[in-house]
Image (cartoon, rainbow, N blue to C red; front, side, top):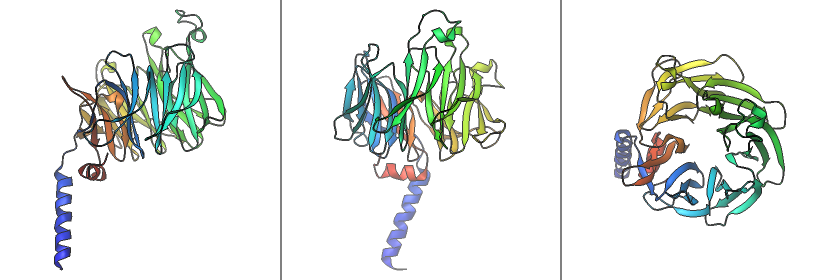
Length: 354
């Protein structure tokens, strides 16, 4: 073997050894000053929404490099949600008054472009190859009358092309809050999927997962469970949580279920998951992230397997390139952090790539 090949082999062996022994745990991406409410990652990088500690202003930021302060892209009294598409990020803002919402987009180094204004309490955003989906909420017609759903707030889910040249209403859904209480999960085979929580006004929250043909049609409710639960969409499978079947009271923990989008019976995968957590999908494998651990959900009924240590606020997490991102607040410091979950993601971390 030539000396150059020996050197290359040694370098490869050292690299493999570093990747194998390196721990899966959180690493600093950027220090922040306020409270991060959302993160989103994609080909254009990592973005997050940050609110000032006093809640008076919000800003959209982009990571500039591991350990370095981010680049501020936009500001508004409130930024409700964001979604990454290629090298741009779409985001929803609100000024505070009725009909003051806006949908805008911005790329690195560019100025924000307003695509739509006059939105009513916007919340929930999804961008696909061809379309943009978002939700708005009409305020309660008669506040305080909880027994008549039509008099309570109603959420309206809209669709448009990426340039917002066309806009159409897809569905009107029951709601109990001033903003849409759920999230848009994704689009599969011409169907839009979303999860929604409502019924809080009855002190007995309910979570549903529904779908609707994006070209128009009637919505189909796929899941209805008690409590404020979560859901995630795989390539051809839907995952969701429900109250525990093994712990008392059931509302103190979560069970994870699976069902094929094509149909079939729900399948229980695991139980005893922490109440504060979110479902994610890596490839087509379900994960569950609480505020301490990222768990691998088994393919069939079994105990979950700890995959990584991660101290993070679950509601802020997002994932791209096999890496999970989120917000962590210590006693004195606030950070956006990353946690690689695959060998390729750990290699990106060694190369200082976000």
